Every structure is written in structure tokens, then in C-alpha cells.
Length: 266
Image (cartoon, rainbow, N blue to C red; front, side, top):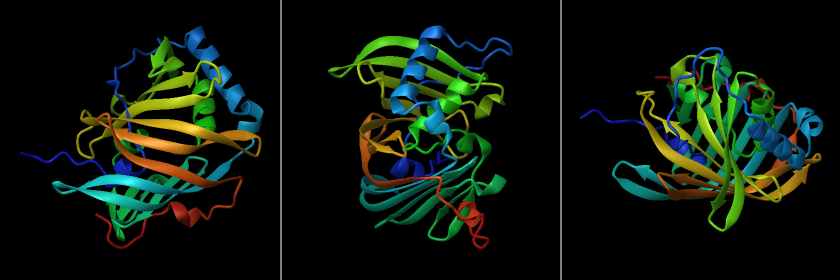
């Protein structure tokens, strides 16, 4: 039996979608008014499009506690996480008792790096990734992207919480790189409280793991709210909790931070 490989960094740092990808027909991108209104309200609650758009680079650091699979066993994980984003470049790095791991967009040469060993990442894996702490920039980009399909899921109850649901599908790109997400917004505060998405297999674009992120403890940084508590789930089971300790915006990030090591590449 062939083994389905899912990068460890996805499990430790963030998760992904309960909704299968559905091919869209060119020229039929749906952006219904209820979905647009919900996203607009969320962007306003997070600080507004102007304040969110003024940031061009971000760096967040925090503590992580959780579990991760190692072979057939499950290991307790504790340590630190650093998230960096500048333009289209991302770096998501963890330093835990399981060893250092990082996801790097690599200026077009994306890789996951573990203990100095670098493994190239395929396009469908890169397309599914985002930095979970930076929800404002993520939602603003989706709102402004006419190729991003937005469908209202209507009001729902998420546990005891009343929420508005929006389904997001990226279009205008090859099918295997499309990403599907479902966002949940608090009906009172309008803030995002959960997103469900997918963690794709390294080898097989059609295979993915269900997952989700819960957001809470929003705090302002440069007039924009960021979630300082993020809980990750995989196949409906909690895998980690991240407590953000600092968020910096418009910080100078060395270009080399996004490049994988030249030695050990596979």
C-alpha cells in the first residue's frame, strides 16, 4: 500500500477544509450579496479596509502546545511558532521538542524544511496554505478578488454561538490548485471565529485531511484586530493551541528568511 504523506508542519501549525473542491465553470463566478455583506462587516470589525491595507509585512510569534504523529505514535509537542508574511512570500516556522520545522514559499521554490533537510512542495500544497493569525489581510484579499467565489451559507449555530457562514472558492486557476474554505463569523461582533479548509496530501491533490481553526482573544495592533488564540483541529480532533505573544506589522523581514537551505534539498 502506498503511503499518503501530509507535511508535519501543516499538522503542528495550521489545519485545512471540510468542503470538497468543485470545478467552477469559466464566467460563472458567484459572489452573492449576503456573502459580500458578511465579509464587508467582518473587515470593518477587524479595523477596516484602509487600516488593513496599510500593512505590507507581518511577523507574529507565539507558543504552541499540542500533538503530532511520528510514525504510528503520537507525540506531545511544545515550543514556539513564528509566522512571517511579506507580499506573496510566507514563512511558517516551529521550534519544538520534535525539532525545527518550517514552511517556506522560497521565491517560487517552496519547501518544507525539517532539521535542515529540505523537501520541495508541489503547487497544490502551496495553494492551500495561509498564515492563520493574519485573518484581516486574508479576508480583504478574498473580498477584493473578483475571481474568488463567495457563497452565503446563511445563519447557523456553532455550539451555543450564532454565526454567519460564507463559503469561499478560488477560481481562475488550475483545478488542482483551487482552494475551498468555509468561514464562520460571530453574528454580534462580526469577527471570524472559525475557518474550515483542507490539508492536501503531498503526492495526491485529490486526497486531503479535514481540519479547522478556531479564533479568539482578538487584540488590536496598529488599529487592526488579530486573534491571539488559535486552536487547530484535524479530522475533528484538536491537535494544538497557539497563544500569540506578539504581532508586528510593516516590519523589515530579510528576503533570505523565505529561502530554504541549499544543502539537503530533495
